[in-house]
Length: 207
Ligand code: SF4
Ligand code: SF4
Image 1 (cartoon, rainbow, N blue to C red):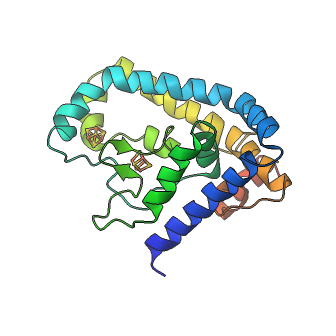
Image 2: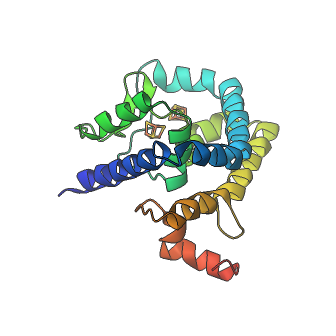
C-alpha cells in the first residue's frame, strides 16, 4: 500500500465513522451538542474568511488563480485533525460528504490535494491548517508592508491555538474525547494519539 492510499484510507474511515454516529439513533442530539460546542470556532472561521476575502482575494486571484499556478492545495496528504473532519461533517449534507468519499476513491496523479476539485476545495469548512496558510509571496507582498493587517493575521494565528493547541483545554481535544467516550477511534485523533501533543498536554497537567 503506498502512502497516498494509506492517507486516503484513514480519511475515508474517519468520514464513515463520523457519518455512522451522526446518522445513528443519537445523531440528532449529538449534532445539537456539537453545534453548541463549535459555535465560537465557526464564528472565528467566519471572521477569518471575511478578512481573507477582503484583504487577500485580489492578490491571490492575480498571483495564482488567473493562470492556475496556486501553491495552495499543491501538496498531497494535507494534515487534517479529527475535529476538522467533524466540524465539516456537521456543516455538510450527506451528498457533500459522499463527494469527499468519491474524491478519495481517485488518487491524484498530479501530487495535489485529493480534495481539490475544478471548482476549489470540496470541504465546506476546510481544515484549519489550510485556512491559516499564506505563501511566502503573500506574506512578503501583502502582510509585511501593512502592519495592521499583519497584526490582525498574527491575532488570528493566536486565536487558532485557543481551539487547537493543547497547552490548555481546547475544542479540538474535547471533540476527540466526545467520540472516544462513545467507543469510536480515528487515526486523526492526534490530540489523543500524537506523542508530541500528549507531551504538551502532560506538561499542562491535562492527562
Ligand atoms: S496564498 Fe499564495 S499560493 Fe495561495 S493563492 Fe494566495 S498567492 Fe497563491
Ligand atoms: S483540504 Fe481543501 S483547502 Fe486544504 S489543501 Fe485540500 S483542497 Fe486545499
